[in-house]
Length: 396
Ligand SMILES: *Cc1c(COP(=O)(O)O)cnc(C)c1O
Image (cartoon, rainbow, N blue to C red):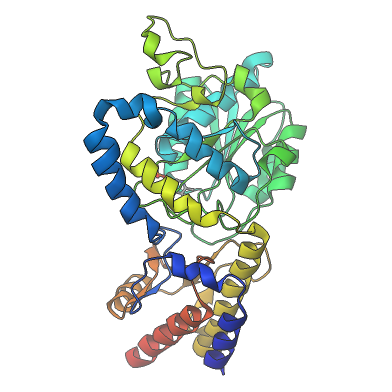
């Protein structure tokens, strides 16, 4: 029954043609696009062209011809995916580094008129790097770091709060946080919010401009399929750009980098969020990968992601019963992954991988399955649930 339903859902899927854009091994059920997106077919040829032509033939001339401004150019391709008007997103550095830049920038913005704001609130369940970086930012800025569950932000937000760092989708549970409501609460307290969009960029509509979000960062190698270690992005809205002072004042963020001036004078626009020389090969691989999104309606992507994850939960309920616990919310407050809890999660994930069903494991006991609406099928959902059911049965 589930298999027939999956076949029908796949047939009726308005996005099914997009799978053709990806270079996927037909023997593998790939459910880890939330950790490393699959490669769009066009990327390999583009990277070869960049190496042979831009690097090989144009050599150093490629910097002024196209490379130096690539971070802004590629940023403009991400902007519509996160609800940002042009001139506000740049691709640079890693997410960890951008969290650092954004959070220090947020504290400085908040303290500009209110030096008594000496607390940073961080989502207590955050992806570790965000928490580690926040701890260092707190130490450097002389603020107090308060790790708090998102549901309890109300209890701690106040006139001592400088900045709040929060994940849009929880990497472990897949829970989706309410961006409009959290942003409004932080602003009502007079503080600044930094959203981490690592697990949501590209798979659900995001309205950074409309919500008046202060700063945002995100990965490009997850659902945006930019490739391993592809550079991350950072969003700084236009009205905050003149007062956004990030801590890594490298020459890449200078108003006139090639003037080689002795004093740092930041670019008036989004380029001030840059630091040093961009990693061109990864950046241009990402540039090619992002072409896949042209003409794709994010509302449709979101609808498919909810349907796929919902269908997978149904398969799990039916085939696995209560052998596993579904950790991910069953309502619409979830991203595009389903997390299951089982005490042997680590070995189960390894055994699934041996059967070419690839999800991942998150300590201590979570099996994670990411559903990338651009290339995952309902058939993948059934197959993963069936393989897991077989594994659990064979162990009894
Ligand atoms: C994946 C992820 C990161 C990764 O940061 P890197 O600097 O790219 O290693 C950071 N934060 C969150 C929330 C993530 O999901």
